[in-house]
Length: 358
Image 1: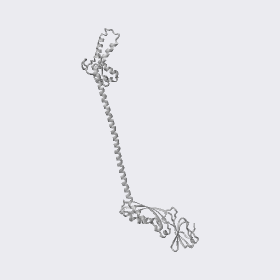
Image 2 (image 1 turned 60 degrees about the horizontal axis):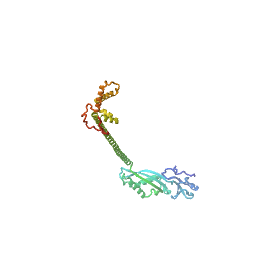
Image 3 (image 1 turned 120 degrees about the vertical axis):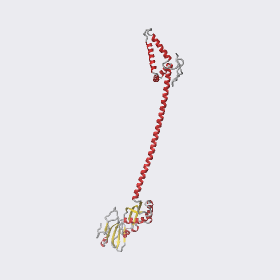
Image 4 (image 1 turned 180 degrees about the horizontal axis):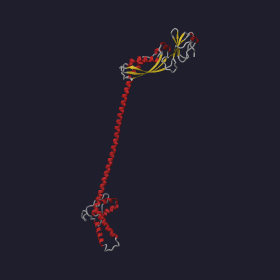
């Protein structure tokens, strides 16, 4: 690094990545000895602006550097020519002083004519740019309601574009992006209203879906009840038919037991033993005792082969009476004359009863 006779009058401890406010990094006074030895500032990637004794400026962009001897330079300005980004939030008025628009402004700036910037004397580039934006924007946003932020933003962008580039007169090139929004209180209020609307919409949708679900469940329950009712009706009808069939069977057996159709119902019971329960239930206790006693007499006669004939005379007569009683089927409590029985009822599913020969 070159050694100068005097220390810099102004110098920033900045590197290539520093966030700059003033792009002039160094201001150094030059002596005759400095110009004679042709000493230059060490940083090569910055622009050098040399001031002459006549009050003019000469700029040398990198990599160009002048011959200092004999030029009459009195000072040198080292100017950063990099592109810098800065962001800020501004408050812009609406048509009601109680409410202000919030503006998010993103800027990129760069020194393109260093001698013009040095001559302008500005030391705060972001402040210069944001002040100029506010000066152009305030009359535009003043004509809009706080709720019309979208229309106000379009009008503001058009106004900034029509008024020309920012800070062009001080040797800067500036690109900007502006986003306009309502004030924070209005935004929070709108978010609360939106949240309430979302909750209400969810509640309505949940209720509608619940009603629809309940309707589907109710329809399923009604369908099951209809099926159960139909099955119960079929089961009841089947039971009634079964009871009617059993009643007809009971009537059939009662008739034949009382009218002498022993052979017919005995043959039927031989073919259908499952009907024995109905026959036994249809008999009265006295009929059962009478039949059992008569069967006992017959059994005694048939099994008494070695008994003397004169001992069995009374027994044979009794057995003959029992057999005649079975053939005539004149049980106690029977109705109708022996010779004129009524038409016997037919058991369902059975063949018509045939008369049994006496």
